[in-house]
Length: 342
Image 1 (spheres, rainbow, N blue to C red):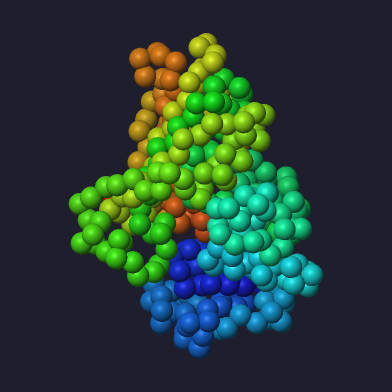
Image 2: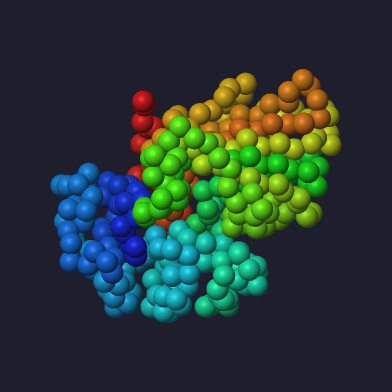
């Protein structure tokens, strides 16, 4: 059994990690930390876990966390990088669900996150934890940078096109929409039901923190600079991301369905829907990314639809997928839940 710790177990991502891990046959939860809730039973804060977990939240203790095989950080940006070096020195492996290790350039990190990086020497070692891109490296990693939710949906949707060189990398558009759980479990006027219900809006149009992460991914596989226009939107729903992606074809003869089928032929959590229209409820609570690709009017623009649950494939589920790979377990272990309907 793997001894697992969770740092920051009180947010939506932490709660989703707990929901998955309590049913994982190879995991023993060793510590769940929260400075604000230390001493409180986990199932008092999260009644849906009654009968599933018999632990209290504790303050972070390096000696306790260092006794774990793996520690997940479900913390705000800038938290994990303060503790990760010591844990790695103790032989504990780490999966960070925040952005601390996603960007390889520390100056780019500081520009977008407003703080200097505390351990830039680890950025080169950290493996970007999108299994469909980096499976082999994940298996051997000590430190995983779990991808963001928007970057997961956008990267998986566009990857086959850019990797095959059949679209123009200078003109790529990602029009993405997310449910409010992506903003975290905190009080905010803008997230009140009366403020966002029956409404729909774009935000961070001038630049979103996930833009450099997406561009870093796509440029690596395109082998060229990618000019990405990324605009996120907020939907009045709890879970889910839908990314509608646009690119211009440079190869008019490409068979798009065959291209995607070949690229994702052996990917358990990628579900291709030729001619379909994937919706967010079809992945609610599941670790799948559902994708459809189309070429309207046989023109030169290709449209890709990519949907995920932002808390599962976009966060906690993907983190468990990475954990399974790191410890030689079946990749889908603990992640076979069917999506919820309705």
